[in-house]
Amino acid sequence: MAKITPSPIVSNIRGKIGNLIFQRWKSLNICRNMPIGIHNPSTSRQSIVRNLLSSLRTAYGNLSIDQKVAWGEYAQSLSAGGNADVGTYQLIRPQGTVMSGYNVFIGTNSRLNQMGLPVVLVPPAAAIAGPTDIAIADRDFSSGFGLHVNLSETAAVGDYVRVFCKGSWPSSHTYLYDTHAITSDDITAGFVYMEVRTIRAGSSYLYGDLPIGFYYGKELAFQSDIIGIAGYKSSNSNVITKTITNTVATSLVTLFDLTAPLYQADCEAFAVLMGITGYTGVQWFAAMVVNFCVLNDIDWNVIVDVADMTAAAIPVSIKLEVEGGYLPEISGYDSLVVSYVPL
Image (cartoon, rainbow, N blue to C red; front, side, top):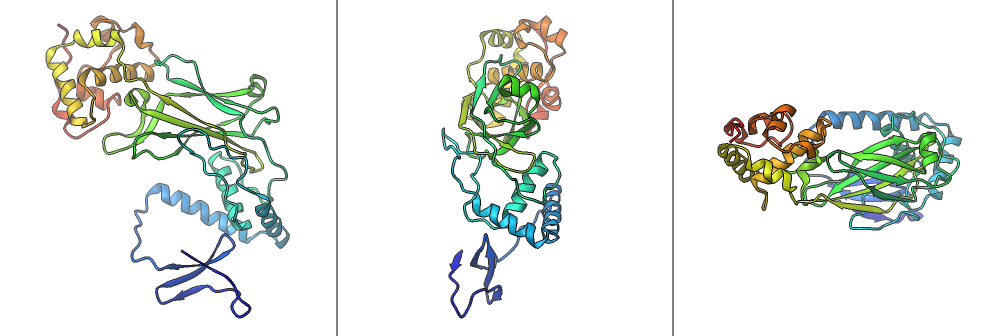
């Protein structure tokens, strides 16, 4: 992308000349090559985003001249300062320093839309403080683990905390993990608590919002900010990371040893089908038991023998475990249908 410096002869240029396209971008004149082709899957999510952007473009076009001037002045006042870059991953991008009033109007209202808040036609009048930090709360693995987003003294009821997440594996992308409207109880406590029970995956092996038992040995990163009800985006928190332990509890290893040899063989075959280096049948068995208990509000520590598994109605085959959502669906899983039979 090339930037164009206006001259007394040409102050503005738009349109196409040959394979070159001239346009305005963030208050700059730029030139880019015309794309050879357009990849347009036209998914339902794309349609939602396109409809939102279309409605926001229309809303901006209907603003008065004074309102557009106000958004332009607000854009000039913004900077990327105050966005902490701490930890292995920087998940939330700071606001750009070169932005037009139109860019800021669209970005502000897109963020408000994430929280289900209405469109604002005037820019925020005042800045808001971001979280002082984000930290891992001390919680038992069987119910997930918790995050504390610690609030500043100026935090206000009704503003929204956003938490973003990213995994350490190459195919993981940053995504909005959760949002929370700050309450008076949160203000009194000085923090917002969020529980992490599932993580979104998008690799060739795992996809969707999966219980944390699928992430043995993986590192997860979290970062937060606050969005004011008037649309102001705060500075970012630090980045916190947590590694889900890949050590299988002794009680789960013992429980696996009590299962039928054919079922154990199926678990080992499932681990091979997954194609993840270092994973074994006992690890996937342990992940399945923990995931089942987390999703059904059972303390997995009390499942110590076959009778406990039967009483808790833990699935009795790989096929049932996959179709129940306790193990990921992969090609060939339905060939592993041996029922759970205790020794």
